[in-house]
Length: 92
Image (tube, rainbow, N blue to C red):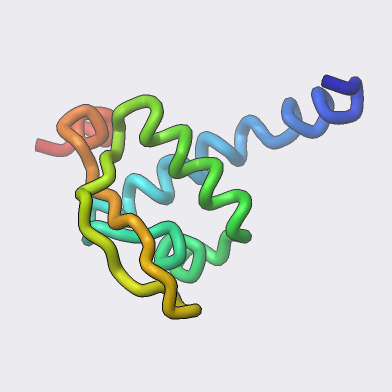
């Protein structure tokens, strides 16, 4: 990784954490697709997709196996909070 990439990543760390929390908070309200999160949170696709992958890899969210149409008409995975995700938000 280049020094400029490392610096960019370091500068984004506080925001990435906030973005993860924003997504988890949205998922308290309803199961969501990446497209819905992008629209609701005002995130670029690359940003929302990366945060969703991180949350999925950490087992805070899971793919429900269901699909819903995006704004462009494509099928997209619907994600749901896991127990671990709820616990991370301190919600019972």
